[in-house]
Length: 494
Ligand SMILES: *Cc1c(COP(=O)(O)O)cnc(C)c1O
Image (cartoon, rainbow, N blue to C red; front, side, top):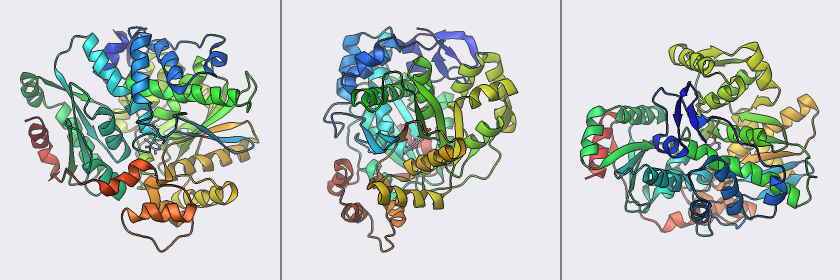
């Protein structure tokens, strides 16, 4: 299968090249030239397979240079019992008559980023080998919390890789910071930056475009790469779990073969919901896709009006992983809908120049046929956590709560009661303080004691990777100014 740039079809690459490159040289995103269709009996066949087997089956459709044996090894390593606390890997839990949660947080960092970041290192190192690249890859990541820890866990002690994560000193939660600074592994580095997430992100982008640094590193046998969500190696593993969720519903008799479901996804960069769209396009009976946003509702507005406009106030919310104003992966949807690389290129250059673009009426109508956007604020988010816990004895995190709110708004607006799978993206224990407040607990413990408090209040066990933080000693304490990030890289690679 060929991969192309979303902005220029004539730039073509193999799967291994696409994964190794991460981003096309014209700034476009590397994307399959066409989407494979699931063979007719695929869902029936997949329904009795393990999650790992389903992953191999789906990924093989996109990665013809990789053998089934290779992909099987990757899937077993990425989704095995040392990594995930349930053999189902991504279990589907029934909440009520027509609402299901696809729990994507049973991995080592308790957030859905694990689903892709446990697989990416295998895909990336194998892709480099196929291209006879002998240098060590140095992954640089700027994180607002979940991606950094997910990438550290995924890449820790992976041969021929180094990983260095930058996070904003005051921009991550206490649990998230502890998760990162206690990270184990010989090839990892973690460094705080004075400033906010944008400062860290801008700093990392500067490192990537620092030619002098690149040359120096090349001489020492390193090259730079990235693990952020525009890499195809992160989108592909996400398609698997939507197909897997449909198969679970079939297997458990919750739906009939061919019955359509809706999917509702709490969205930031548009990567997760894009994977659901791809699953639909490949032939999974998915009716509508419901895109849930917090107060940073740039996508809700886009889906309603066809205008994408990032010139607006940025809000810090209690669902921080969705605090995003540029949803990079939307570009891939635009290519899928328009099939016109030149049209995508034109929207993206308008976005770069003015922060805004408007799609044609035809494109807007096509998108609106299958996507619905809804948003809610923090107050509503907390209300939803409380209600869902009261009514169904089911505890959800702040991001998943935004999706529950969007689904309710969708059902009220359309009257559509189709069975719906909500992507549940993080363990509530990652956001103890806001979850406890939502449950009405005003007197709160400090630091990691919050984990036990939430456990006591709800009777649910603290996830093992978070409980283990107590016994870990911080290994990293470096804080740099944003102008000094290059020194941190040099230090790490000494
Ligand atoms: C990253 C993240 C999201 C947003 O996912 P996108 O792929 O960026 O849309 C939602 N919830 C949680 C908990 C996350 O970590």
